[in-house]
Length: 451
Ligand code: NAD
Image 1 (cartoon, rainbow, N blue to C red):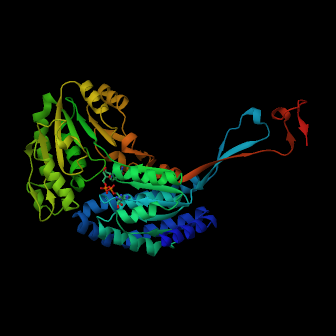
Image 2: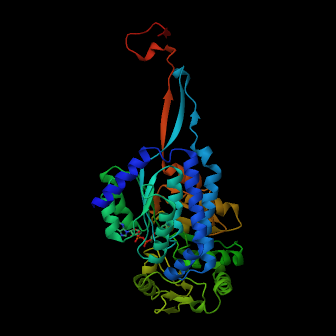
């Protein structure tokens, strides 16, 4: 579309003129963003409630708070990250020195999803702005209230040639993707990820794909079962299971299945009460289509706990499912909802073999007191990131890169990893003009030469 082309041209000119080249300019931009977010805190909370029935607690702890602390983290370190990094130069290159300069790619396109609609749009934006890029941000159409507030925040903070939000659905993304960007950062499902990568290939644009997958959670026989149950219930049922790093399913050691299930039921009751569908602090499913998909998934396995749902509010209670087989629909695709199937095992090696037979997951969790079990799962299995004796928490450590591997994604961000992701590492060798070594030239063999 002509309007997008013009906007991208304006953004590229803005980058080329060097308006955001200095640390001072980027610092002001990020500080202004933090201030506007603080001013809009109530509107963001209200929008998240309208879109997903998110509680004020979840809105702050998993969306607004994460974004604000990312800005603080970046502001404290950005000046150091931006400095050219000296690297060594071999003796054979006598007279020269070398460094790596961080350079913005130019105009970045960010396409974000609906499940943490504020955080997953703003966190990559922080990295892109910190690295000096201009940005077009396309939030999800499924959470329109949050998208509107994001638009207002961005309009109030940035000039359009620096950052612009374009709202819309798949057709808007499709139109944007025909244009030439300098970087594309996409968060969402695998199928659309492939479309994005194909579109990027036409312009040889580098991409990051933050995708999902079925993230296993292994609970070994020697785990602290009560604590494991509490941490799994928290990671799984936050946002009603609509989280890319939520444990998708559990592998429970057969000898402790019953005891663990009892702990898990207690943990669910502790976090959401005995009537979760009436709980104001429990999130709902984003759309009727997603709700129907989840209800259909519940039909084959045995419901060990929960199973209630309410079509009028699109809420589904935290549900534990047993007698699950790998062939059932619930084990064929990412659940992305509050249904927690449990598979049993006897021998950890069968778990490792089975997990390896499937696509590499975005996250993996293991609960065990044994160092051997911990290191065996960490060494033998490939996954984006994960935790030992916890769930989801790795996502909130800004020192850790966050991203997938294989089908769960390409590229990782958060903290300095975001800055690097959105920066081209320009390699520079500075050569002396005081002398010239002849070895590299044909027919010049008589030692050092003054010029
Ligand atoms: P989605 O792929 O349906 O949509 C994501 C974005 O892509 C939206 O902005 C949407 O408008 C856009 N889009 C939709 N169709 C498109 C098309 N044909 N062409 C171009 N753009 C299009 O994903 P979703 O349902 O919003 O998210 C669910 C998936 O995302 C899950 O698999 C989940 O694990 C994954 N996810 C991953 C992360 C992560 O950080 N790795 C975070 C959240 C969600």
